[in-house]
Image 1: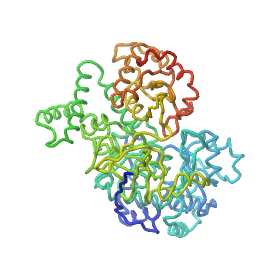
Image 2: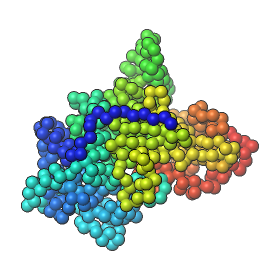
Image 3: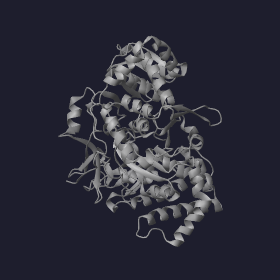
Image 4: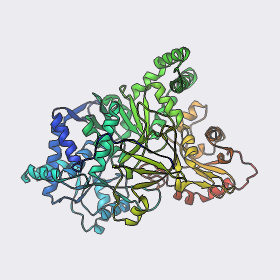
Length: 606
């Protein structure tokens, strides 16, 4: 079976810990800026030095000690992505505790399960509304003590409380923490069943961040590197980058409200950005929409084609020719530099994970001067386990194994992972741990292939493989990702298990719908009306035909049904990490799926 590995660039050390990473950053450059905080005044940012950040962390940690938190105790954080989240996280670690992230959108039942399973002693929440959610289930949490509200000065109160605790006690606990100690339990949002608690150690985080600094120096550790976090810090991807910025020397910023994202990108000016593919799709689609109609729209689309052609030519012997270079120069002046300016103007790299980006967008962004390094990882691998590098970027793949990681693809296509970044087990769930960790390898449940350069291509999820009535095995992810790139489309669920052909359920993007309708000479209408409009359906049929170009006839979408609503976290069809709960969709929309197969004589898309 195919197997590949990338050698570790930093040798493991049993004394590794996250507090040690911070102490080394402070010792190396105490006055250097570690983070910048938004002042809320006209897009200005206030620098926080490494020494000042460490002092804040120690102050809050002393408060946690004063509140009775012992080494190994669990402290939960339920908040949007903001500076205080990072301070609290590092303070829990400094006090020897275990940090438990909770999505700020979690329901009372989800909160009850996580706080109960992790035996949480204290909770830091962002708002009074979050505190109210915890209070709904407090009666079922006998070990839970205080619930402190960040918006009501929780961190300042902890610092005040801890003034009688010697700083030496925090130093003692921090120094006593080693690589094998538990750092966090991250509950996978899970598309089915109850979330499992993934136990990640200090060694997991140290291994992945130190190897990342050594292997991706130009991206995350070159002079002036800075990044703006806007993904949820409850998610392993953002958490990994938060810790990575400590040894890399990069400046960290936070934006809690994605409605302010473009404005914050413009003022913070990150050099590297991390996001999920949906963000890159939205930036492209909204930019196209803002171009309006007529000549401006034609110029935008021409410039996009030039960018894609230019990027593809970079992979050919000799690179772009003179004519293409001339076109690129014009497109750069008219469109490309404006797009980069919208992302702050200084971004050279973006790291994309969570789902496949798609080759078209990968080439488009590289063509405008933003190299998107697509990667792959899971909570169980402390985020990245494969990633494209500046020196080896193969668009359409998630790159070679991460430094220190080994990848194996079994005969059935399942991806196995081994390395110092792989979790130690599922909290309180030895059966699931034994199933997932076998002979030193983590069974990911994802499907993929390895090419001649050792680059990994993700082809689907093992449990989501559809077997048609004709016996054809179909991985839905390829079709879903391509179809979701259309500006009208929000979510896609490909169906067809034990059916005569492949179909799809589609939801519309309410945010981009009005602009699309206007640009196509149609009256503005709501999602429910648009879902039945013949021009909308015709556009989606064409989008399905383009998506089908990636697969064989037997795997292609023959019919689609547009639903009059979207899948959201609020209505229960999306997880907090924006994954569709496929089983629930198949259950709740069984009638709509059946309707796709009522008359199989017409297998054209509808």
